[in-house]
Length: 86
Image 1 (tube, helix red, strand yellow):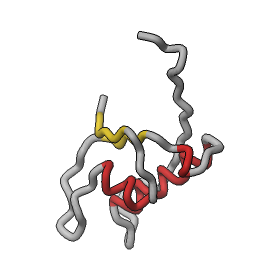
Image 2 (tube, one colour; image 1 turned 90 degrees about the horizontal axis):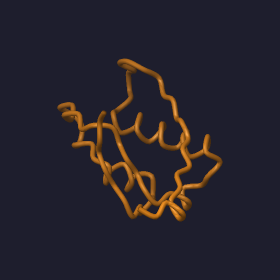
Image 3 (spheres, one colour; image 1 turned 135 degrees about the vertical axis):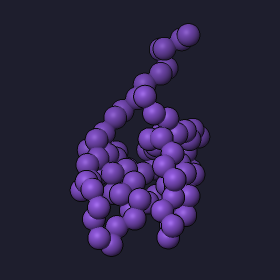
């Protein structure tokens, strides 16, 4: 594998934890992504990939939360989308 042209810039985005009245799973994801992009010193136009943590079942009043939905709400069109957990 040629790693000469491979790189990753990583930022961290924290959000409040636990049950927070008036917040949805999507709002937490959007806040974390926005904070991570800012932490990395980037803009949303610099993002070409999005990996979200594992799939959680949607709450009864929410849409299914997918990386595609997060990207759509962030206004980005990444070349790579994934959900993963370790």
